[in-house]
Length: 308
Image (cartoon, rainbow, N blue to C red; front, side, top):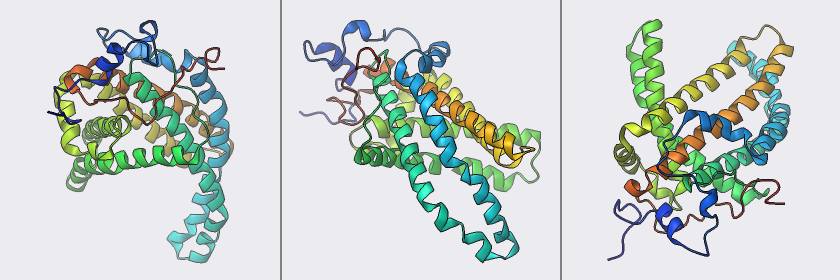
């Protein structure tokens, strides 16, 4: 009988990768041991251990910073909307539309690299993925998978947070702690939704039932990844809020925005590395795949001296 992709007893991608001889994309000396638990230290060092990761942190933040600077003008321009002066507030939106499109494409390219980081980590590779080619179709597909994960991950995961917010009354420190806990749980669910969305060739696999079943099979081993992802999202969200609304000067806010992009990309690499390794270690328990994924699979390792 042919086994379906969600059968937990089906042969996992990692097992197939180790079984195939002569046709594997990586050799055993480039593969991480599956018996070694996921460590936060190795994931923190991962973005800096190879050329593509360092290049991502060096070359993309200035471009993202330049394209995101108009957000300060947009906030100032939309302020009259709260005062009834619609014409003054909306006149800048058509002007900023081309910049918004350029930003979306560049940000989508960054998400494409982050998605490939998750894929190669799920395969147990030590090296970074290569920088993907600038392909609008690949960027659109990658963005679609992130958006799918965002809709079915954050939309459903945020529901407990919104429900508590509507019923908690005046917010005090205890409520803030509860909010943080609920956000961590929400991000943990959304992170697994993202992993399923990026690792499966079929987006239909990224559904709440499959995601919750996956988390149940992994068990408490998913807790470190969940906590890291949750605190990362909290740190990124609070940092952006402080940059946009709490900086004492525009110069300091602009400088902080540059640092924000460096930190966000770095933390994104760390979290997706942990998420991919979590699947890699529990590949036999999950048994997601009967074949190599077609999306986001690097054909050559990411070292600059190996992929030139």
